[in-house]
Image 1 (cartoon, helix red, strand yellow):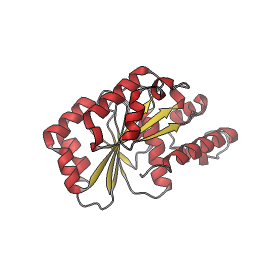
Image 2 (cartoon, one colour):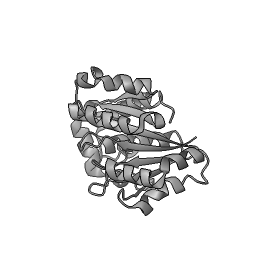
Image 3 (spheres, helix red, strand yellow):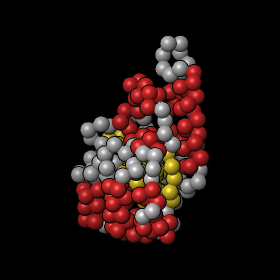
Image 4 (spheres, one colour):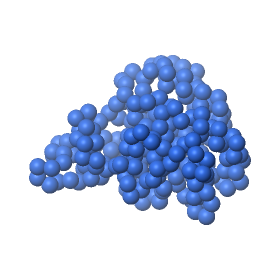
Length: 230
């Protein structure tokens, strides 16, 4: 089935773009064809790290958003990955409601995966609740507990919304923490995760054990992805 993966969470700084980047790397490594779109007009981090696999999209421009659906029209079993910026839910929902996107997607056999990247705050739980209230069982939910943005997710685990996610057939996964210094070096070099792991030039890129840490981190998140129907 054709799928559009919306990588969101509404809240800034929860790791949406990191998740989009590592998911893109997973698709590349698994040879799963996809088209990536970066909706973050201020940072464009997804497009910066994976320029050959992504293009910019404007969330409050209908012509720009239309291409998400139109690009799948003649693409059998296609995949689209969208890195959403913070606070983009309202214009995205307006486009979907006014364009009859959900009905058209059903006709085209396009499934929507909404990834909700979370830190360990109550705000992230509230935003997830609002997302589910909007779509109910019309989309598939993937809740991502980002261990790089929090250690204690008891607020989520003790909330009613966790049960709702599971009742709706959603998935809950963890994104392990990557050492901050290593992530900073990758970001400074504008490297993809593949480039960060495989850059062995002396005096450039990550050191031996830093590259190893990235490899282990990527292997662990890939195990989480393997649990999902992507």
